[in-house]
Image (cartoon, rainbow, N blue to C red; front, top):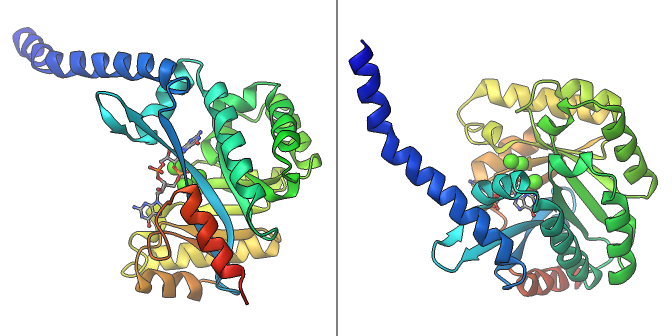
Amino acid sequence: AKNDGGKKVRAFEPFMHEDFLMHRQIESGLQEALANDEFTLLFQPIVDLETGKTRSCEALLRWKHPELGDVSPAVFIPVAESAGLIGDITEWVLRKACEAAAGWPEDVNVSVNISPALLKQTNLPVTIIETLVNTGMVARRLELEITESVLLDKSPHTNSLLRQLQKMGLRLCLDDFGTGFSSLTYLRSWEFDTIKIDKSFIRNIANSPTDQKIIGAVVQLAKSLQVATVAEGVETEEQLDRVRDAGCSRVQGYYYARPMSAEQASHRLASEAVP
Ligand code: C2E
Ligand code: CA
Ligand code: CA
Ligand code: CA
């Protein structure tokens, strides 16, 4: 048995080593990425089902590493968090997002993802106020998307930070709804304006009566609390129909649009604004 165990460890060693090197390469690459202008911000429309118009655009970060090429944010954001680089990156994202949104029609918001790590820092509200002032954006058009699992940390600090952000007029969106453990508690404790139903629930909605029922129930609950619902990851007309049947108010996904450049987004929004 001892021998087997040893073999297993050796068998995995090369991969673990590669992962480790990759992590190091990403980490050191991230340190230069801002200075070397390697990030791009894309925007994906979130469409209001009642009006058929874009209600907000979610800012999604892209990074082209000089050697690794495109690295997914699902890979580099956690590295940025653990390396203490997420604050500077988020500052850049907020600035780019607000600069873009300042030129959009006034009824279109911009949604920015906020890392868990940042809710533990006190300077987030200051960064946001400075960004709003410098870009001429109004607070009520900025939505912060906060992942459900973050809030598992129900510390008094997180609590007062969220309230402070709300008092500033920002809108809060509970992201990845349904993937955490205490979704319902969060809804009760904080006044979220929106919840975003995770795309894992949307994926099978056309074939799964159970997922349809879950989404229907979540939407009803949200309505009773006057919280808007976004269905994320809607790719097909069938999924759209089911989500609409469930009473969902907004939709985001490839069916309507993939994430696009700031330039493309502003063209699209301008053409929607024409009566
Ligand atoms: P998320 O916040 O859940 O963002 C939604 C993800 O779903 C995005 O992936 C988006 O491109 C993708 N998506 C949108 N519509 C569809 C669809 O119809 N089908 C499928 N299969 N996917 C769809 P992306 O851009 O790769 O981002 C991955 C995650 O990285 C995000 O998940 C978010 O957690 C994180 N992220 C991205 N940009 C930022 C950022 O600026 N700051 C922080 N803190 N996190 C970010
Ligand atoms: Ca998000
Ligand atoms: Ca999500
Ligand atoms: Ca997510």
